[in-house]
Image (cartoon, rainbow, N blue to C red; front, top):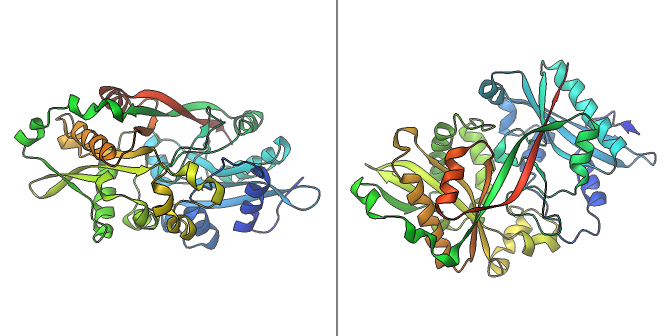
Length: 365
């Protein structure tokens, strides 16, 4: 087993994925837009952070493991430590996985990193965590799909659990939005509006402004630039249902948002393509009718408006809209285990823990 001497290409990652998930009818290709951008040098992320990919070859010369190491100054600012991360991690066996993880840690140590998290694709915008349960189902939208061997490989390389992200399932057939007093935000002179596809660039910029301020103290979250947000979210424009992406307005200014998307993972699994790929988008209209669930992927309220019921109003609106579109359940996805306010919001609507994803850490240097 040897680490690839040349700079890895996307084809190396794709070969490892193809070999690892061959015959897995539940596999859904993750969004790899950031990885493609890093390997080509065109990712907006590289304007403020660093990243380097690694691949290990088996005896036949075929890629058997792949990962990407990230140094994100925003993450280091958040933790107050020399923290880095490793993402886009895929491996066929323990030996190959240790080879690429060790190579990534050597590079990170050279960049001054002393603590590394994995699997963590730079920041939470780009997927993170190793799936810990429900391996006999397709992945949920925006969430990791990996076999149980991923956590075993990380453990063998010296990584230990440092935190979890949780999903909470809300039963829409119970009409949970009726628990919320809609007149409360009316008295606050707050109104809700759906996002506009025609003005989607503007909506993305409003989204990232609110997200950066609202999540400033939330574990793992990193402030990203407008260009990064546009690169990430503009690919999703046609996949987003306006009724499921809503803003809270006060005095003509956006003060909060909720972003949901239909869970099309099961319908897209046979394609082995990302939802935001051209083939995935082309199939949206056909497969959307087969989806029964929707994922609440992000919820944010400006700090000066938190605690006043705006977040609850946004979740209620999302539940009502999803039920109106004939979805039967909603999952509040990827809530950090130590994010008590978001866990309380999920509980307010009857949300019950249904999935978990582990983040593992290792000291280096």
